[in-house]
Length: 467
Image (cartoon, rainbow, N blue to C red):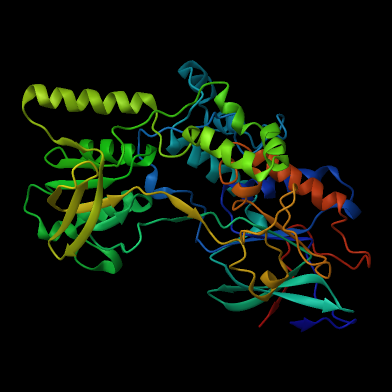
């Protein structure tokens, strides 16, 4: 814990953002729009740090024909500010595709296109972010017994530096989730790395430049893939690998009888409305659990009905033609995986009979979802000042600010990791624009500036001291 001296001249930012995925890009945009219309005394100084060398959002899953599951109107800004120059429609106009998109008559753009939109928006606020900078620690700075700002240690190619801020917004995203006891390897993948690993497979170069999977295959390429999972990503992986490798068998393993369709009906989709966040936050814990049980099928372990129909149609056609490359091992679980240099041996166990099937494959892909990063994991000793509920979960107020002990006067806001308090949209795009507006309003309402009125850096300054 560091003691701040009265004569300390290091500038203190109003806000530091950890991570620069879509949520914090939206935050940067909201701050920039506020600062342009505010007078100098009301501007909010901010900077973001992102450990990736450039903007990237689920790059490994940018399959060429995969579409978004949310409307383009739920972009980074429109629900907060429909007139914003950062909207998806403005992006289309800048690319000369607005009329073409309208003629397409589709609310759901290609995922590749939406990623390009995110890159376009991130580039317009790149003065507010430092890429290749990883936040490795946060420490409280004490003045007269209270913590009035935080010291954020950031590692980059230039070494370590300390940056100071009165508030943090944490947007560190999700982490790939593997089944317990399963480790990723050259032949055992998580779907988040699909496209990169397929490229390595075809080039014969594995991780860290080692010989890849393809080096062990004959000229025909891989002969079998196994895809584990029952959700949208799993189904997309099955369809993609089946199309990309026309000589390979693709085996889908899941515990359900078949893929379950996503409920995207108008009434069910109201669970993603901004008003639903208010209702969820105010609901008793028992009602929260019910709502998640009722409406989990809007997002979790479900598949778009069009993709389900396409896969079934392909499977049936192959049966008719007597050349079956799609296999669905339903009501089953993958219970063992053993990776060797030239194959993976997987054990698939029927949940009905207990019968075990041994499959030798070139690659096993686990489309087994993600888990939120521990929102307190990066905070070091500051985490000890963050309060938890009876179940050990971090307590979060309606404005996405962590509840802390009274001596911590700084705001720590979460973009993600709040499903237990704010509902199913915690890590989804649906409410991103609204959420960043609410966080900005909270900063302003709570008095983002300190009472001392000390000098501030400009909005693109970082206020750092080298260490």
